[in-house]
Image (tube, rainbow, N blue to C red; front, side, top):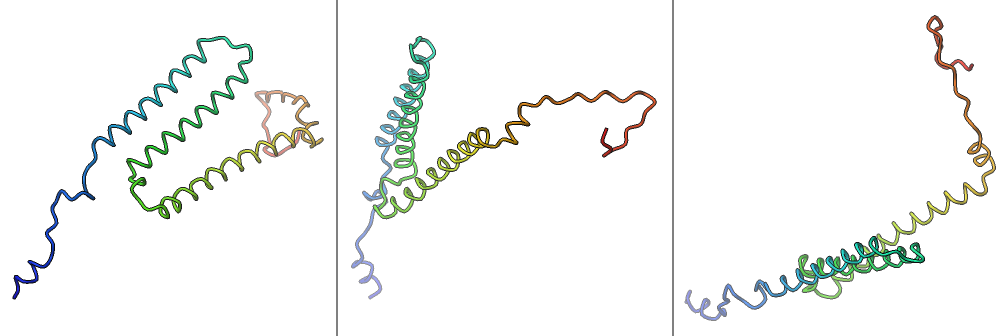
Length: 153
């Protein structure tokens, strides 16, 4: 009777299809990451070797390309090495949407802080007046005199 229960349970092998280690996918991801990184390096070296008529525009365009390529590398790293590609859609969305919101919050706070700094420099007359004033240099104390802390000169 004890052996009847064992025979009814299907036998699972250690090399089940769901638990295989896919070396081809890992190497494919490695090659993709390598190609993207080499492409980024070629773009960066080319930027410093070639003279452009409008270097600020080219710099901003290259920064955009670098951000997009970095996000592509992050996608491949997360998908393959963190095994997120093999999860269900709801788990992927519950991880990726808060991460994107976090990145958006950081960008918004940096943008707002920069805007506040620029507006303060433009509209705060007190700040603007004090920023242009020259600071008088204090004469060093003579050897016989003793400075009192907190005393205004």
